[in-house]
Length: 451
Image 1 (cartoon, rainbow, N blue to C red):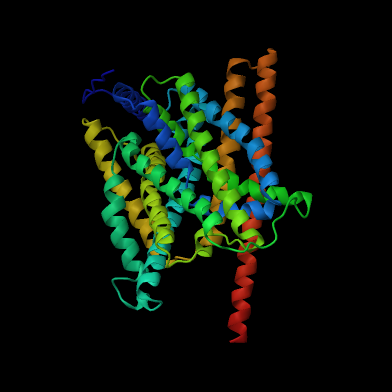
Image 2: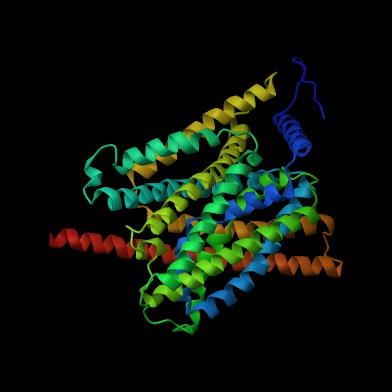
C-alpha cells in the first residue's frame, strides 16, 4: 500500500504511525522468511545463558523428575501464551508486542509495554556482555595465568569493548529482525555443542557427584525452578517481530514453527539440566561450565561456544528494545517528514548506537550485577503470562462484551489464570532476588567492618 504525503496536508501523529506501520508490515510479508528461518530465530531468542543454570535449578527443585514435571506443565502455558500473542497480533495487524498492547489497552498499554520491554531487553543485553567478558576471562586465565588482567589488552574492559564493537554492533542496525536468521542458525549450533559437552562430561569426565535428590526437601521447593524455566523459555518479546517476517503469515504456520522451536528448546534444556545435575549432584554450581576443568580443550570449546551464542542473541534483544524506544520516541516527539524512510533510518541508527553504548558502559563499569539482573528477570513472567492474559481478556471482551458465549467464558477464565499466575511468579522472583541482594550486601558490609 502506498501513501502520498502532501506538504500542505494536515495529518495527525496517529495516522502517520499507522501508515508507517502498514508499510512495514507489507514490506515484511512481501519478502518473508521461511519456516526454518523462523524456527531458528525463535530458538536463538529463547535459548540463552540460562541454559548453564538449569542443572542447579534441577537440584533446588528436588531432582530431575520434579523439575521435568514442573517444566512440562509450564510448557503447555508457555506455548498457549505464544499462540495468544500471535492471534492478537493478527487481530491488530501488529509487528511488535507493544503494538499488540496498544491495540488491546490503548496508549497506556503502549507506554507500559514499551517501558517494560526496554528495561528487560537492555538489562538482558548488559548480562550478555558480562557473559562474554566472563568467557574471555576463563580462556585467558587458562592460557596465560591468573595475572592476565594486568595486561590492558587482556583486561575485561578491553575485551568486552573490542569484541562487542567488532562482532555485535554491525548486526544491530538491521531494519528487520529476520536479517539475523543466519547468525541465529550459528547460535543454535553453538548451543548444541555446549549440550554435547555436558553429556560427554557425564560419562567421560570422571566426576564424583554429591547426593542426588529424588524428591524435594519441601514441596514448595518445586517453585524454585519456575523462574529459571520462565527466563529460559522467554521469547515472547521477540516472537511478534519474528512472526511479522514469516512468509505466508498465518496462525497455523506460526503454531507449527513455534511448536518445533519450543520442542527443540525443551530437549536442549532437559539434556543440559538432567546430565549436568547427575554429573555433580548437590555439588553443582550456578554456572555449570565453572565445574569443569578450564584447561581442557573441550571445555574451552564450550566456553567459546557460549560466547558465540551470546553474540548472536544480543542483536535480537537489542532490536526489540530499540523498537520499544522508537515507539516511545514517536509517541512523544514524532514530527511530520516528507521522507518517512529517511526519518526511520536516522532514528534507528541513533537509538541503536545509544542503546549499545549504554549497555556497554554498564557491562564494563559494573560487571557484577547478578542480583539486579535477577530482579529484571522477574519481568519474564510478565511477558509470558500477564501480557498475553491481558490481551486475550480485552480481545474477548471486544468481541463479546457481555460474555454470552461459552467459548468466550472459557477464554475469560484462561486469561484470568494467566494474569494471576504471572503476577504471582513476578512477585515471587522479585522478592527472592531482593532477598539475595540484601543478603549479599549485608555480607559485604560485614567483611568491610571486620577489615
